[in-house]
Amino acid sequence: MKCYGFKSLRGILLLGLLSIGCASAEMQVLEEAKAPLLTGEWVITEQTAKPLFLVPSCKPIQEGTTFKFTPKTLEVYLGRSGVPCNVYNYVITDNTISIMKYDMIWLCKYKLTTNYLTLISSNFLALDDSNKSVILDKRTSSVQDIMVTFKKK
Image (tube, rainbow, N blue to C red; front, side, top):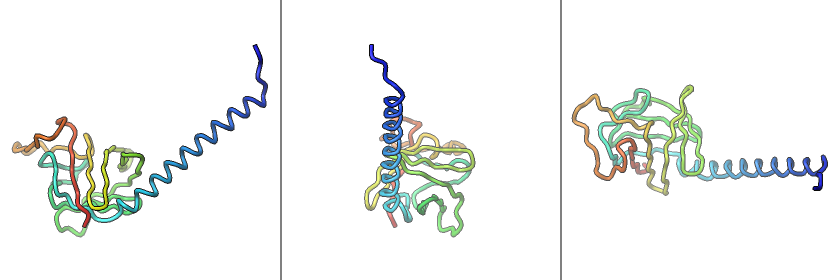
């Protein structure tokens, strides 16, 4: 059995670090490429469940609600209000948006085209069941997953 010395171990560590650096750089490129497409104002046109609210306390989330994405934050405007009901930080990776506030992180899957954005979440977009007249769309694959579609303003 051949014993590999310190030089081989150093080479393996160097390759490992390079791999991590390349993966990190690739993720950064993905974020930078998608952020400009996401930046702007998006208005809800469809949702698979009604009524909704955003954790911790933005409601009602419904058709006409505006999500404004800046390069680093998501601002949520209810109706024609000029003041956001909440502001969140976010990070884009692959097909997921991590939305953050204080020490909480919510994950949303998303689909993005030039004019449409779809968010799918089981925890950020929540069903407001304080109102007993809850409407569920039959397309919802799971009661827990809520899908909201936006059109770019």
